[in-house]
Length: 86
Image (cartoon, rainbow, N blue to C red; front, side, top):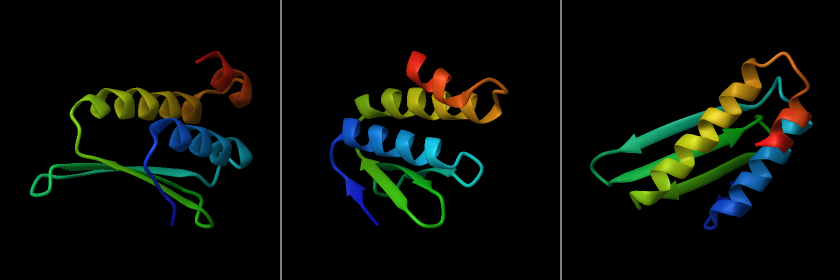
């Protein structure tokens, strides 16, 4: 399970994974208060991408990326065109 240290690398890999097969991809957000870690996991049961942070400024980035993926998952328009515009 690849654990990404760089946010840009994680978002690129997660977008690629989502665009490959949108019907199989799941996104999970998990916060552990005892550790102060926020974790986002994107998986399609074959590949699992993980990004973990304890920095407060990363929360906004994760929130924006998560909402972008959720918009794509519920949109009826072309998914690849919508991802490129954001």
